[in-house]
Length: 243
Image (cartoon, rainbow, N blue to C red; front, side, top):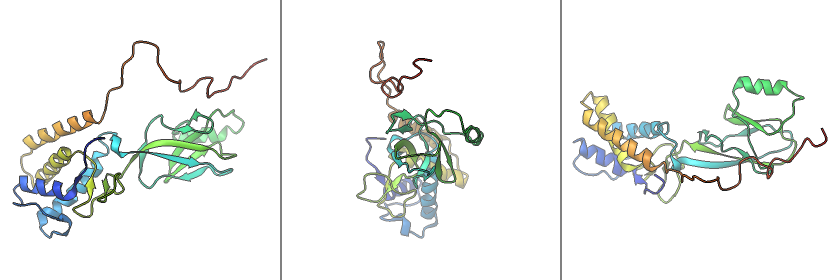
């Protein structure tokens, strides 16, 4: 998915319509059509695109965001397209220490009650469209984490997704073409009560292939690991001398 060219909404809807026998030629802009089947297909495309987000952590929909902490402020707005934290990506870039969490409500309350407990790193939780920090920052620092975006569509000319649904035929879709095409046909046939055996198999194959191509395998090494360890004397100072 990371190297594939994004196709347009018009191409996907038109090809699905032709293969389903609903139309005989491509439609320039399905979003101005009054044909009931085309209206249904473009609505299903929106639902399909949003549901595919839960199928896999698509690399093309991953983003990084940063927080500039302010003294006394523990609440910060989440990105408008925040769809979930990517595990183990949260770091305090100022102190070079990983962020703790995300915490459950129960864990958060435990932390709040332990006002005299030593704090080794910043803990986070996500609630009500915000990310909350504990302890409350006492100065400026840069926090960063990666997240799954809810955006999977962009306008023509853009290179990254900026929308959650297409609105014109030229909008670009950032899922693999075959996955969208088979998924759209499957949704239409299911809604009409037709047999979906063959198209279900085609969709399952397309989903498996898309996920496999989007998940490169790491290089396996038999020797000692290379690089800087996540936690070491480079980012956690020595302490406890003289005790």
